[in-house]
Length: 151
Length: 452
Image (cartoon, rainbow over all chains, first blue to last red; front, side, top):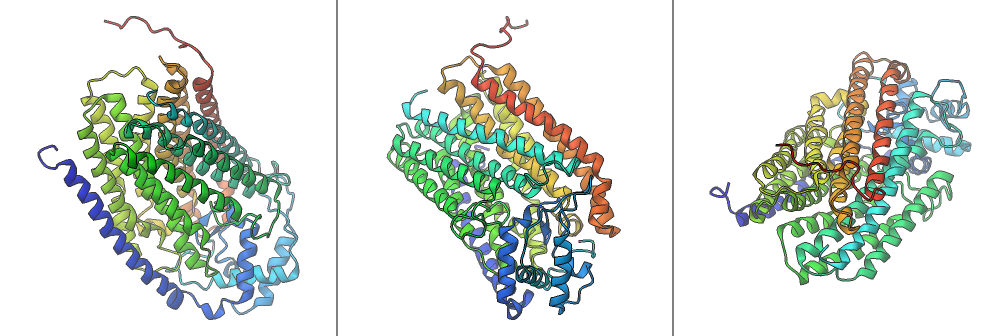
C-alpha cells in the first residue's frame, strides 16, 4: 500500500470525503424534514390531545416493552396500527378511548405464564390523550409498513 | 506507565466494570422474564429492567472510552493530562448522574416532572438534569483532553479519537430536541443513535484498536496510521448515508430505501478492514508481546464486530428484507452481537492491556482473562444464533402469515430458554473477567519452558 497511497493522501481523502457525505446527508435531511411536515404526516390533526398522549407514552416508558413503527423493545405487540387491529374507525375517538381503557384497566392479568403489563392508573382524560396519539400515529404514511394487521 | 496522570484511567475503568456487571445481571433478569413472565412483574416490570440494561450498557461503554482516552492520550501526546483534578471531577459528575438515573428508573420517582422525571424515548430515558450533567461532563472531558493534545505531540490516533469524541458529544445535543410530531422525533432520534454507533463510535473504536496494534505488534506507526485513515474514511463514507436504513418506515421519503440499502450494505467494509488490519498487523509484527489476553481481545473484537455489526447488519439491511424483519428478534440478534463485538470487546481489550500496567501487575494474569473471553464470546455467539432463529420463525409467522404477536411469541419460548442459558455464560464470563483483572497476584498457570 506504501506505493499506492501516502498517509497524507489517506488523511485528505478521509476529511474531504467525510465533509462531502455530511453535506449530502444534511441536504437530504432537510428535504425529509419538509416531507414529513407537509406530505407524510398531517399536522392539522396533531392536536393538543395527541401531544399530551405522546408525553404519556414517554412518561410510562411504553417503548421499553412495545415497538412503535417497529422501534422499541420486542417484548410486547407493535402499537402503531393497534387501532386498525382492533377495528376502530380512524374518526372514532370515543371508541378508541373506550377500547384502550377497557384493555389497560384489566392489566395486569396476573395469569400464570402470560406476559404482564403494569397498571398505570390513567384518568379518563389521559386515556383519551393516549388513544388520540395512537390514532394519529396510525395516520403517518410509512410506505405501507407494517405488512399486515398483526404489526 | 510513563506518565503519572495515566492512572486516572484506573478509576474510569473501575466504574465502567461495575456498570458492566449491573448491565449483564439486568440482562439476565429480563432474559428470565421472557422465560417466566410473572417473575418480578409487580416489583420490576420488564420496561424498567430493560432501561437499566440498555442505559447501563451505553454509560459504561462511554466511561470506558473516556478511560481509554485518559490512558492513551498522555503517551501519544507525550505529556501529562492538562488537569487531573478536572478529570476526577468529571467522573464524579458521571457517577452521580448514573446513580440518579438508576434510582429514578427503579423507584419511578418524579414521574411527569420535566426536570427530574424520566423522559421515555428509547435509550434517551435519562431525566433532563442527568442529560445536562452528561453534557457538562463531556465538555470537561473534551476541554481537558483537547488541551493536552494541543500542547503535545499530535498523532493520527489522537486526531481520530478526539474527532470521534467531539462528534459523540455534539450529536448528543439532539437528545434535547423532542418534536411532538412522532415522525420528526424519530428522524432526529436516529441522529443520536445511528450516528453514534455506526458513525463516530467507529472512529473511537478504530483509533483505540490502532493504538493497541501499535503497542502489541510493534508495527511501524506510519503503516498503522495510514490504515487508520483508510478505515475511518470507509466508516464515515458508508455510515453517514447508511442512516437511511432507519428511514424506511417512519414517514420519511421513499428514496431512503435505495440510499439506505446501498450505503448500509457498504458498512460491512470498514468492519472487514478492521479485521484484516488487526490480523495483518499481528502477522507482520515482529514483537512477541507477553500480554496475550489483550491480543486475544483485540483480535476477538475485530472479528466479532465484523460478524455482529457487519454480517448480521447486512442480513436485514436491504429494504426488501427489512420490510418483513423490522422490529423482530432479528434486530435483537444483530444488536447483541454488534455491541458485544465492536464496543464491549474493545473496552475489555484496552482494559486487559492497561489495567495490569497501571496496577504494576505484569507479567499478566492472563489465563483466567482468556477463559473469560471464550465464555463471553461463546455465550454471545450462541445467544445471537438463538435470537436469529427466533427472529426467522417470528418473521415468517407474524409478518408473512399474519399470526398474532402473542401467539407467535409462545412458539418462540424454547429459543428464549436457550438464550437465557447463553446469558448465564456471559454473566459468569463477565464476573471472571473482573476477578482476573482485580484479584490474582500471580499467574494461575506457571509459564513453562517453550516447547521445542
